[in-house]
Length: 76
Image 1 (tube, rainbow, N blue to C red):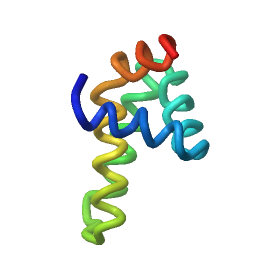
Image 2: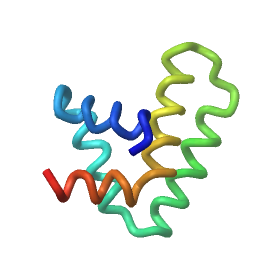
Image 3: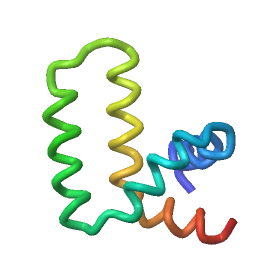
């Protein structure tokens, strides 16, 4: 498992808001996820603050590793 995926799984245990966000993304259809990915990319395009960069990384990791996250959550 990729370290960044494990970080998200660990964060989900500590913060119910993160868990809610990840679960909501998992429940999206592939078309909804693609639209969401485009919106996230567009929103963060000109954002440079450390918080924005970290948020973008979070969404990028979740979206790129949706299957692995989904399987890991099912196993818990």
